[in-house]
Amino acid sequence: MGKLISIVYKPQGASLTEGGYTRLPLQEALLVVGSGIAGDTKGNSLTRQINIMAADTMHDLAKEGFSAAPGEMGEQLILAEVEIDSLPVGAQLQIGAIARIEVIEPRTGCGKFERYQGKLKSEAAGRLGKMCRVVAGGTIRLGDPVYILAAAAREEIPIWDTDLTKR
Image 1: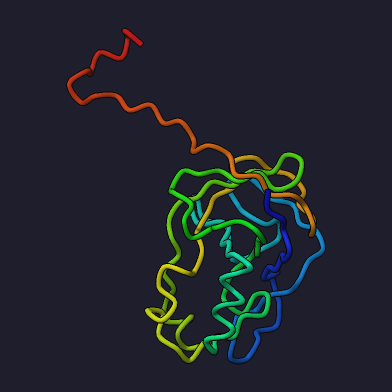
Image 2: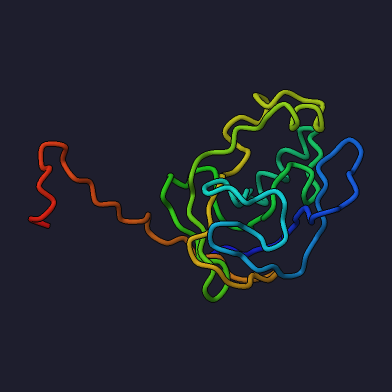
């Protein structure tokens, strides 16, 4: 079992931070299906709603000279005792009592990440966490337990079986 240790977000109308991501810390947040963190201008994509990173990875990247205080890597949630970078696409994590997120893809970084960090994204390749979507909304709080659930079941229909009335 892991633990939620940081929540940050970018609220509408927040003053831009010079030389870094604009992120404000929260003690708790509401995760909204189809959006991400309520009031966060970073989410609002159908798939890329929440960006998660592992506390151990943040610590390692800080030792390598990256700015890695909460929000400085562009993440929204930091989890302790969860090996985020090894989670497969489709894995779901329950945060707190009812909120659940699903891993959509690895996070690879971008030009903004390189500008803010003053380092190439390739220097952190494979360690930038995961992009997720919210699959069950609910309030999350610092200190909440984090459980890794089985990957979502996805029924695959063979392309030669086009008669769906048999199902």
